[in-house]
Length: 368
Image 1 (tube, rainbow, N blue to C red):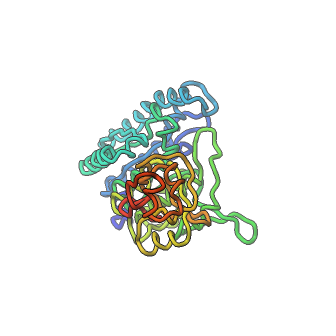
Image 2: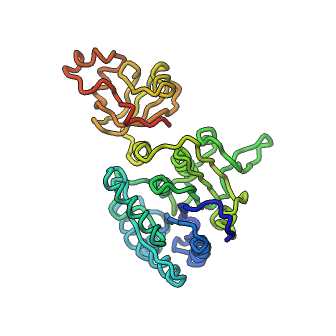
Image 3: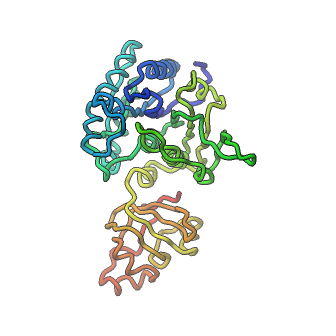
């Protein structure tokens, strides 16, 4: 690894397709090639966090399953079997290179709670300070639909956010994001300035072993670039792919981080909790939020969707369907439905009480 490395702290997300063979079990040769590259990064002074899929695939092979189970208890059993085997392979290889690994299993509930979020962050940061390689995966043995991230792309983005990584590198089985050019042929996009402009090129998952697809990767890219972090999607089976990325070569699709970065609390508000509902607001409210830095008032709300309670995270959309912001609501969905379009002074008369002047206060609102 050259001394002029491009990034000093990175999160590397490895998809199942990169480290699992066609019969679902882990491909030790591919795992070793990945580990070799990570070792060289670590030896060159780069701080690395590895977010690795593959536990369920390995568990499937041990249970002799050819297709990903649809039953939650079977998925959880496969994860329980596969996670220990996955970690053993990583630990054995890195131990030979005198690198200590640490396993961290997370659910969305761990990062939705502010105190647990900070505890997770402090643990990972301490491991990095000690020169230890954190290996992170979703805790699939206890996750349910309500608390699942759904894919490790989103988990890796959340990890990159809370450790303030310089880059999130997503290794998959394609060379990046592709579009169809004017000749009707697929063409790789090298650099993306705004994720929202390319999301229509995304496709879903196409493999029995994995979840997600390009859509989830673009969602992850949007999450980290909002925080000023670069995201790279690249082919993890390409020889020396991590070296090429770290030395600034055109090795995938690069999503540039935005110059205006979210602070730590705003990152947590925007991305760490599950969105429970949404509001559609009028043009006046859009201007107040996005241009004037105001709070969201009841007068600007046009429509309410979802069933949510006080304190839940909700999304705010324009009339054209563009997501503008996320924030913690001061009112439940049923209450907002009653007071939408009303002036602040009219809330108490309608509801019989008034908790707050704002539907979402500016301090609890993140503009996306």
